[in-house]
Image 1 (cartoon, rainbow, N blue to C red):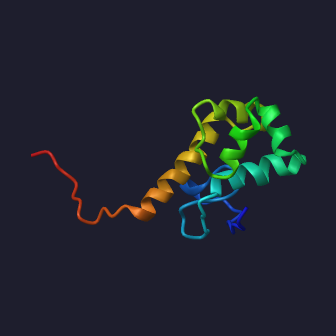
Image 2 (cartoon, rainbow, N blue to C red):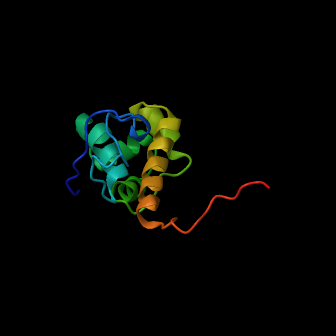
Image 3 (tube, rainbow, N blue to C red):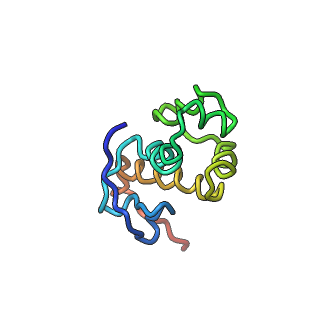
Length: 120
């Protein structure tokens, strides 16, 4: 995986709950951010192989590998599995994916020409 420099402190709405922040301008985010969190904070500290982690989560090695390699997003079912095996609430896992998705979209969508509509 690519090296990712992340801030190890909390910054309000940017917090992922792992003590890292996204979208606050103090950290560099790469396309493999979400898989990196899963790998560095959950799988690697337990000295698990991808196969062992997949078996623990109850998915195929291919499914977990695709997630870890950034070829797939987290499915609606996966947060329940990750929560049961590694901790953190299912909502926390979904929030992590959502925060990253929103951050990535904010980097590429130009909203400068849009204006808020107001009721007459």
